[in-house]
Amino acid sequence: MIFFSDMDGTFLTTEKTVSETSRHALDAIAEAGFEFVPCTGRALTGIPAVVLDHPSVHYAVSSNGAAVYRLGPAGSRLEGAERIRLVPLSREAAHAVWDIAQAYDVTFDVFADNHSFLRRDLYDRLEDFVDDPYTLASMRAGRTPVDEEPDETIDRVHDLERLAMYWRDSDDRDRIVEAVGAIEGVALTRSYPMNIEVMDKDASKGTALDWLCRHLGIPASNAVAFGDNFNDIEMLRVAGTGVAMDNAEPETKAAADRVCAANDDDGVALTILELIQRA
Image 1 (cartoon, rainbow, N blue to C red):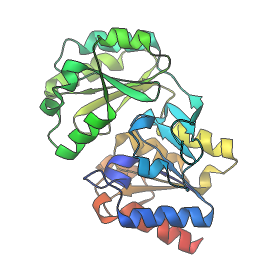
Image 2: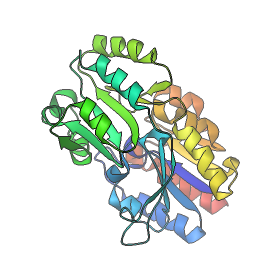
Image 3: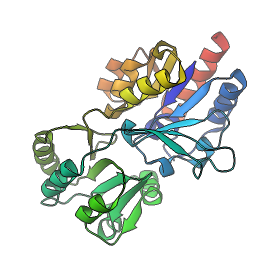
Image 4: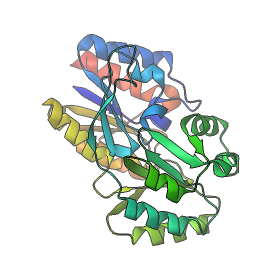
């Protein structure tokens, strides 16, 4: 058995912490010889160290499935991480997205090279776009402010993974989604109500789950996946057992095989412990 879990709104509490019950579930996975794979829209460096450092975790999926990593040994999980799969967003497409976005009052995150880069003035204005203090703190911690235009960042980075925009006006969101949706070769999703995420059309958590299972010789039918938002839907469909959180979007619940308790009620951990006990 192999477990794939989204982080925000799923494995992590609303305060962006890992509960004691969740730590116990990770211990149970390690003791049973199974795998736990964080599968997130975050950059690799944005995944909490308490998750990456756990002995049940040897692989990680980041940037909504654009990148898959084999983690380094204990003591150097990030430093020794090796990317074993990449579905890059083309620079041409990324420039086209920025050409559209710069006409609106939105942030513009460039996920690349294991990090998320954001122009400094937009980084300094994150509180204009995000109200929740825990999400805001997480975003600040997970982003690197840069003194350059997004076009320069897009050209400078080595491997481009995905883009994200946080908006203030829903009319702006609708116009951006329509315009970006017309760009060839891209896919759009979201992990928060107030953002837009752009990847290559072949990058998703679902395709990453399928690839990693095949890479490890584990049937996808033996995979259990947990999620709460639109960027988790394909992952829940590909896994043998797709589990939506009680706090998930209705569309995410509709794509799942079952619904567990909310993230603040240890839904992922309790389901994992149940499934291991039954295994």
